[in-house]
Length: 143
Image (tube, rainbow, N blue to C red):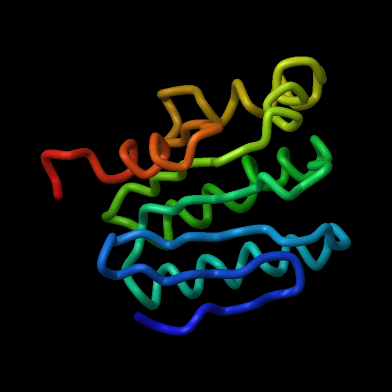
């Protein structure tokens, strides 16, 4: 298994054994840094042919709705095109605090509803339990 790749705000774990890219945020960073690191995530995922991602954002205290809008409108469409023909699948592991933000903040409500819409050319699901997130990414019949 390759060594972890430590970036400013997150660490990337390439898990070819699970066919998953695990991304764990460890600190907050400037929005421009965060955006640049999204592109680095995509490069690593593509290099290892991993279209299933576990995004662990439990350590984040905030996620501006504007960043979520950029991820939805700019990053995900490019990631989908880059990973094709594989379908991009993202399990987002969130803290109870962030889950509350997703339902109580109007900006987050809009962006989460957009991302979760089954009409999107990618699959995304929200979780508070890592085991459930991994089970969603790797259903038992595939193991």
